[in-house]
Length: 202
Image (tube, rainbow, N blue to C red; front, side):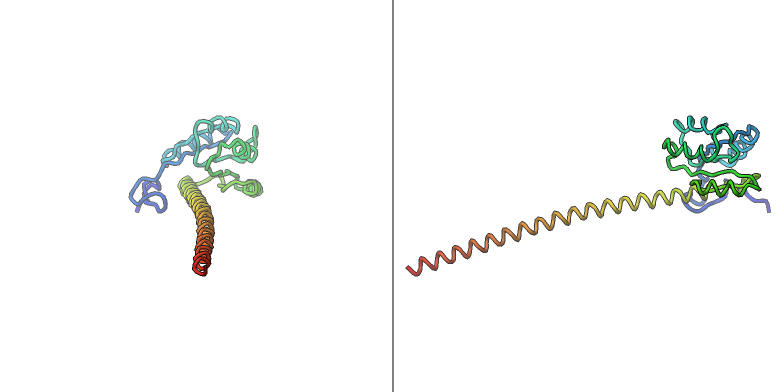
């Protein structure tokens, strides 16, 4: 039986069953024009919005106006090496929540290790199966969204705890004031009682 195209199949996670998968915004940085063209065509057919950059400097300019969900960087970049490109994008605060995926050669395991050590989120070995690449990119993006949601939930929880701590501090202060008022009232009543006894004894 013929398999349905991956972008038409149902998926779990942030996409609802029976609904088309969300189009991811991809930025591919590769100095090889043929590789860029082929990848752009295939990824577009898989329902992704693809931006292309021939080097890291061009990518920096594109990210100023068009954010990406995933940035794919060929490890063979020469003008601005791949790891340096990733670091520049991050230091310029242009990555946002984007994930970085390094594209490495089949026999270039050392580059993959260096990329991951430098902070890349994943790596893919070329030549790659585009259906498998599509699945990996969607999984990576879904995981990043879940981590972002978890971070937001944690931040909200921290804020609630901080507000509660302030409220409890205010409550303790109000309780101390009430206790002081009570002590003053008891003292006044005792003083009045003593004065009445003194007057009665006269």
